[in-house]
Image (cartoon, rainbow, N blue to C red; front, side):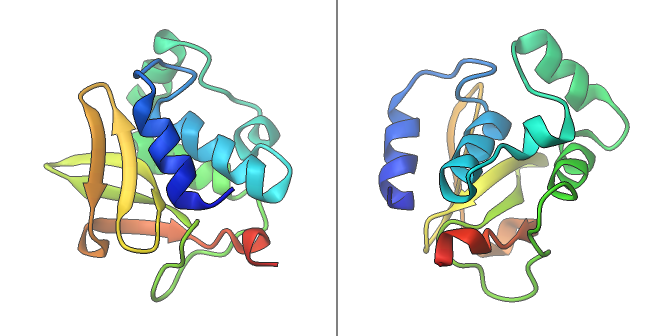
Length: 133
């Protein structure tokens, strides 16, 4: 599946914790591309709002959670220009969100709706190199 189609499909769905929250949709994208779930490998899934908010409330919030999860993958921290399909964290209006790069913009989702950001908003990102083979 092409990343733009994936993002379009995800954005058409209503927000539901454990289904279309930013972490779960990025995890599902990674699994489609690489064959395994980083969150499952790490041992923690967002199954509902309570679990999602509890993870976000921990020290370091979404940034720490994502870094911990991505350590369980073979993905390198991105140093340079992202490629379509890479996963990262963008900060928009003082809110961090786990995002997928479509080749032009980072795309994410939170309870308020879809989030789109240019690369200037990237805080950290990882190469999802397995999708390039």
